[in-house]
Image (cartoon, rainbow, N blue to C red; front, side):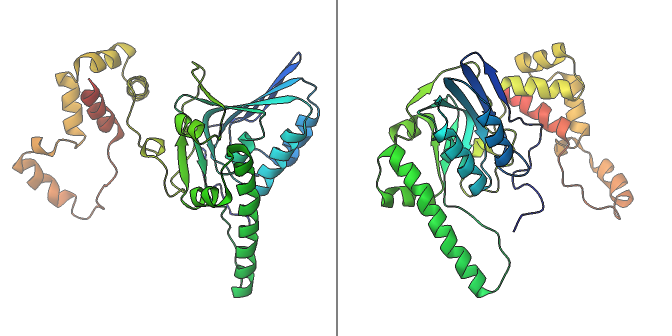
Amino acid sequence: MRPKRSLFKPKNKTSNRIEAKGKEATVYIYDEISWWGVDAAEFVKNLADVDADTIHLRINSPGGSVFDGMSIYNCLKQHKAKVITHIDGLAASISSVIALAGDEVVMGEGSFFMIHSPWSMIAGDSEDLRKEADLLDKVAGTISEIYQNKSGKDADEIDEMMRAETWLTGAEALENKFIDRVEASEKTQDKAILFDLSVFANTPDDLLDDPVPTVRGIEKALRDVGLSQKQAKAILADGLPEDLRDVESSAGTTAEASTTRDVEETSQRDADKPVEKKKDKTAALLTRAEMIA
């Protein structure tokens, strides 16, 4: 049964495209693998038109449809070109299988490789569910074989890693022989920030929606809420100035600043209103900026 919406809900426009130049081509899979992202039929058709000696396959994907992914994997394996996979951000679920279509598999710094057992969504009676469970076991077996062939591990070890939903850094993926090397590159993409990965059970905290902010990310966020570049840089260098501390207090993030009189005046007025649970984003950003500074 096809779900009504994407499991991963991409927050921004992502891309899947092919760029050919001379005897080399670059193939981008920067989306989920499914009818909402990289469509297998379209991908296979476009790849068949690529006449190159080397294909650089660049991946940042949370996975998606198993059978679409298998089609893409086999298409890449059968292509005459040498395929070099670059995991720029995330190769999770079926996209980790696609990554292994490369003759050489490389992970960028800060990227992740994740393997797990396949999922399914089905409606039906008990017999339908038993048949679906049997199918899932068969699909898991074919995926396990691909991981085994690359890593040299036995079936029991791979199956255990899949059942546990295993997330690997570049160093860990190299140690487990899923990849061939880790590369340092200024072009390495920001992990998996385009995707909502809360659907998975063991997603590392820094890949969820509220990661620890970077200095560059805080500066951009402050500018997005209306501050100038000079103000944002000043906050990061020196902490919050007094006037912005007032903004933080008025947004409700420092409850201690409220007087008893303020509470009494507003309590009756707000008695019939629903409680606002969502944090003021501007105040939260200012608080984080002060912590980093």
